[in-house]
Length: 178
Image (cartoon, rainbow, N blue to C red; front, side, top):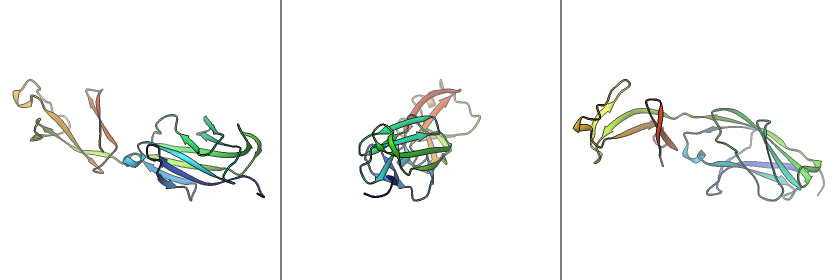
């Protein structure tokens, strides 16, 4: 093969299924955490030629990971928070980032979370709506009408990855939305 080793394509992929979520045709992508598809994603790098010595991933100029064999994948070391992140991907002719450095890419991943809770309802164990819960409302949980209540959250978009419930500043539980 003539010419330097090159990063030919980069995909975001769903880690549990291995399916492609997004192909980086441009160097910037926006990931919306409200989209359940992005609840557990990683990066898959494709090189030319297909087999190179190693592929290095550098997240936000701090976190490094090297793959020495196909598939060249990167799993984020922590959940990405909203904001702008950079991912530099380099290819090398030998394992462990040795040999000739080929043509890599620096990608920008903009993480947003467009999800919002639109309203809350108080429901009984049968799902019957007892009341709508508004900001500042107080629940008197000793009232027999509220024995065994549940709080139902309605979100926009309708389907989100999860909703976290907090009570008086303390985390109570996480409910998966799909």
